[in-house]
Image (cartoon, rainbow, N blue to C red):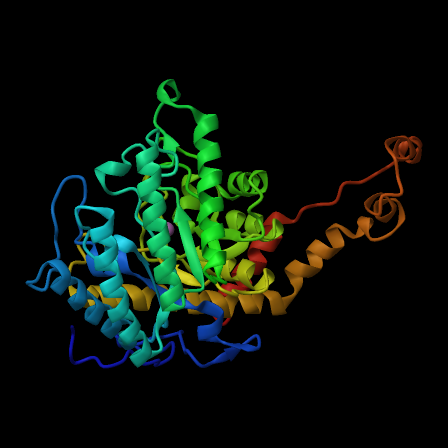
Length: 435
Ligand code: XUL
Ligand code: CO
């Protein structure tokens, strides 16, 4: 694929070479870590190796079949994926079971295909040092799962889903993946008139518990993730947003093993900003990994676009750094080339654009933190909790009566300005200083 290009070089911000990074300088140390260690970029197998540009109104605009089919095609895609990742200097990849190996007629056949490809992936991993960021199972594509997997009304479907997750966890262990994702594709409902919500939620809790127990028993030490999304394909998904998922994990006692995989476009579908979802994950102690993409605010669905909005990538990396950075997680580009960006060169250009947008976001987030004006403002805004009545209340030394007595004679309390516009201009200063 695109043989003239061996490796995408870093050429700096002034470069006009489309096949070069302007900001992503892998080994540059920033805030104590190499850029590559801050960002931990991952390639999504499904969008990159499989998606052909289809939409509801038309077929493929790019042919990724390499003139092959079945297991031969699956192997060719492994070669393609590793070549692409090496050209881009990407060290991780993410996949669903069916992305890498064709489905058989039975679970047993599918698992056999997967195991064969996993052996080939392992060989490639050993040659290149590239490895998965996380593994998952597709439990939404086939007709079997039309009413959900763990929340299907049919117990046989629940069992098939369990078999797929078992195989997925086995693959994660064999390939050394530090994560295993559950995106609840059809775990939700289209109408309450046909749905037993209480049973479905309990079954989902049970399913994740069984997966956790199996993984831990087999020695999986990584993180399990839930990936929130409010809707699409179901009208209402149980994993609506981070706050909903946090409550779910607590209800079923899963917070020690599960974290959040936050996706930018899912956040906006839930009526939140990407930054909001990242902050909610962090304050609940559940920050894990990120599906890095962006939506289109004028469209009401999950467009999975490559992220190029630097305001968003900056605020994302600001949250990541404040949360202490990634441990097992990273930035997986759950993003696909637009239908009209239908050449193999476009795949490279998409990744370069996304990686550069995040590298720039990282640089700017560090500048925002070093600038200090935002942190100082927030510290001052809440200073009344550092001593006096505020501190006493926080340390549990006050009652409702004692607070009422304290407040009874207070006069002239002046609420302080939130300074929103000023702070937004500070962000602009940091983003565009040097003009
Ligand atoms: C779907 C989505 C998935 C998950 C993995 O909206 O984001 O691709 O990331 O199943
Ligand atoms: Co995703």
